[in-house]
Image (tube, rainbow, N blue to C red; front, side, top):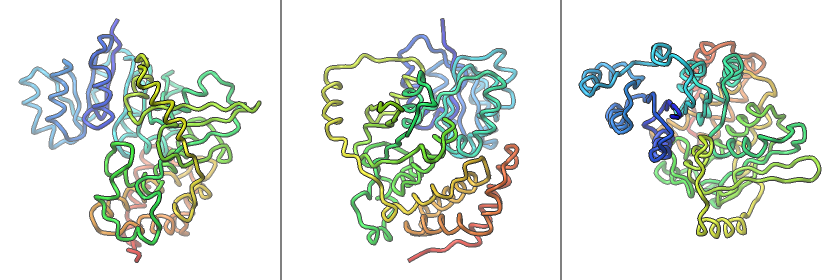
Length: 389
């Protein structure tokens, strides 16, 4: 029996990894593919996996390519507004690999039409988890995180009593500047900052890894997804990026989950595709465990760690403001408009500003509230941006 699957963001890294993971597994039938702009790659994927319904978000690209798709007998749709016409009953899996806050609306739209939703999109979970959770419960849809850290936590506590969790540890590689002094970072060029020591990632997430901002996002994700207090989550530097989560339980029990820096591992396991462990991998794994080399991150080296103190325990606009400020600043750095140090300094100073603090006790009621706050935040940042020297 085929397992029907939809992949949102199929032309990106996670989407391509998912397709590669299921390509040799005859149990899976790709029902829907969706992308933002990359119509050429989308067409190639649709032909390769015999997919008859695909979506493109960009209206201009949609209008350019709809005839070309039609000639290949593939129905090209704009947005996900026709999803209820295509899917008459729930499919087995949906992978949401759309990057950025743009992934939230498609997440909310697809939940009613899938039995299981697998999400790697940090922004959606951070800004809109309370909206996502409500829909998951209403439509009885299972949720599995496939970000390596959160998949690891999910896997470790799946059959455990969560009341026994004492501490969850998120590991961070420390990025490319782990052993570089702060004074030498000001003139770091983007082409150097995007070179992650372990993972193959996009430019934006690579910058977030170098500042440790990515780990702050994962901290907030873990807090929301697993309903934790801030005091129950910690971050450790682990340069090998081999151990992805460590959990301390009552009764002096510690569990950890480790795997290679390959996103196909959490994705495949979340989909129920299990590969046999080879002797070579077994030996390599033992060697890496012997070189774990954990250490505590220092605020002096990674100033964004102080953001943890600002995170409200309850849902609020804080998360949307944080995501928007960081995304905008990283984009400006990649364009050469500000230096590396300015990402962190602007971020911290703006987060602590009186202008934004008034929103930290208010919670967005819907996706439109979140979109409005994104615009407000960007406008304020652009009016108060500084390039620190």
